[in-house]
Amino acid sequence: MTESNPQIWRIIDVLKWSKDYLRDKRVESPQIEAEWILREVLDLSRIEIYLRHERPLSADELARIKNLLLKRAAGQPLQYVLGNAEFMGLKFKVTPDVLIPRPETELLVENALNLCKTQSWTAPRILDIGTGSGCIAIALANRLPGSRVTALDVSPGALAIARGNAAQIAVDKQIDFVQLDILKTTDTLPAAFDIIISNPPYVSGDWFLNLPKLVKDHEPEIALNPGPDGLLFYRRIAELAPRLGKPGGFVIVEIGGDHQAAGVTELFSGNKFRSVEVFKDYAGLSRIVMAELAC
Image 1 (cartoon, rainbow, N blue to C red):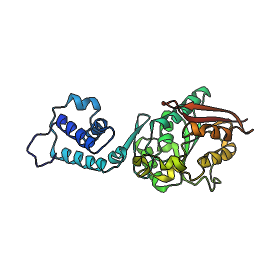
Image 2 (image 1 turned 135 degrees about the vertical axis):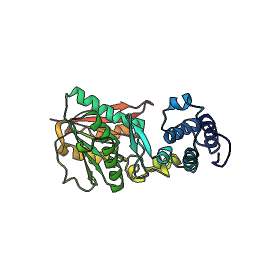
Image 3 (image 1 turned 60 degrees about the vertical axis):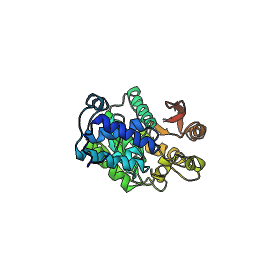
Image 4 (image 1 turned 135 degrees about the horizontal axis):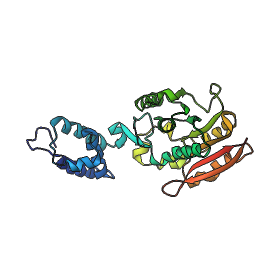
């Protein structure tokens, strides 16, 4: 596919060429990723790509598609190539400074939203630890207009992305973004949060070493790997929660699967917590732990 080629390239032609190109480069889902690249450049939905499949592409559109294909073929994750990712129906800017939001993490938000309904909280105060792109904090603020969210991250680069996403989605007035390493201090944080929520680094040891290259070589290690102790951040959150959360408030954390469920559950089973639940993800793996703070 070249701009100098006199052939008229229609959407259907470019889609087939792109799919074949990505397949030859051993991309796992070439059809889906080719569709996403065309959707991004042409600003069309998936169904519109097929409804308008005879539409010819301009030289500029062809050049932009080619550029994105080359980046993806070079091994960059599709979301970094596109510069955005979807989460809870919202579009978030993502760069290598932040983790790519994943469908499993939507379960954190869904559990928090369900909790607000059952507790009849219309204006909850929420603490998001390790906000990254801001996807959790922003999705909650978007669904809970009366909420107030404090979003922490140790990375200034991640916070810059998160602030931009909050402004783009028009929830920046609801969220306070704070650069903070919770392993060192939390003295500047307010207390009395209804919900403490986190998708912390939890992929340690062999679990990290065996991650797919697409993840391990491109996404920020600081957001994935806590070091030798895979439960490091859960220990710290369990220690901080009784001071930062309201009596009767809740802690909701994402975990790495069944191998972490017992260890994390035990951390939140002391006398400062009243109950602990584990929730499965779409694959049937332990993914969310929710603990209620004692009154």
